[in-house]
Image (cartoon, rainbow over all chains, first blue to last red; front, side, top):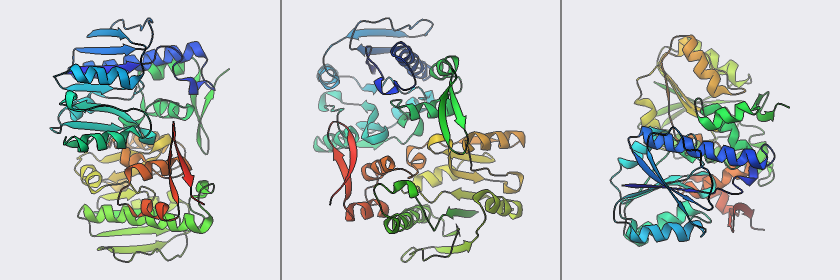
Length: 213
Length: 213
């Protein structure tokens, strides 16, 4: 089985600009990637391929696994569908902005026997996709990819399972998503980074985010 | 085992005002409650108690279960802690705004052996709480209730399990939450109501909500 993690290395996480400056956003994205890799490793998987949009230092020190980095400037769908066409073995595609991902999540996803396993993200995203027969599938990550991927699987006669997880659904795109990371991300590198730079919960009547000056 | 569903019968779901008028919001809240009750019933539970803030017609026709309705003007914590103090049997507290809740979710929550099972909602909420020893616990639904409930359990020597579900985490408070209901809520009464009154997905580059005029 192969694990692929698409990673946007330049201009990542622009919607967090109200809370983090550009340099911080790029550093934060790398910590989230490390959290994802650590969950994969803790699930007993010893290698992964990161597909990067541009050359960058990914700061992968100290991870006890083999990480292969591929640079590709093409869009996400083109890159991944190219991989799918040439891949005979089962393939696990994991988004890089899922710092709450746990080893249990990965093991449970892999334990399904269906041809296609989808873990939804908010607003119709597909945060994890497990393909037992990658050559028979094609991804489309734009729009409501979750519904599109289910349609594609059914049209191609592939069986589908939906993996229901709050932790996997929590992709970090907007400032409010950081609230989830701070609440549920004890011991996650991305959460520790936020705390280090002063981003913390502001709990009054409602839960908000604040940054110490 | 007893199931309790707190339900705000007046002025419910005010944050949906950009999409639904007051009458529609109250009707929508009742449909969500029906979806929750149907999931409970499908999980093999044949009775539930709804705690209402004000007398209202809950439109519970056609549900194949015994529903007891209690009116209580007090705040959520006061009402529930009063129930807990007098309850010897295990207690399942389910929020009324979880239309995506499935029978599988409920069965999985009840299968845990821990004293306290918590299913998180967004922004630190506790969407489902299962208490095997209600008299030894006290709820606090304000602030980051998820973390507060874990602290309470630990302080009182109760074992804790966290139930990780995207469907259970999706409480419907804000317009964006309706997007989740429309994507994942096929066959849910609350989703059908939205479609009937013209609230639908607007899928372009980003997924938004729109209302047909």
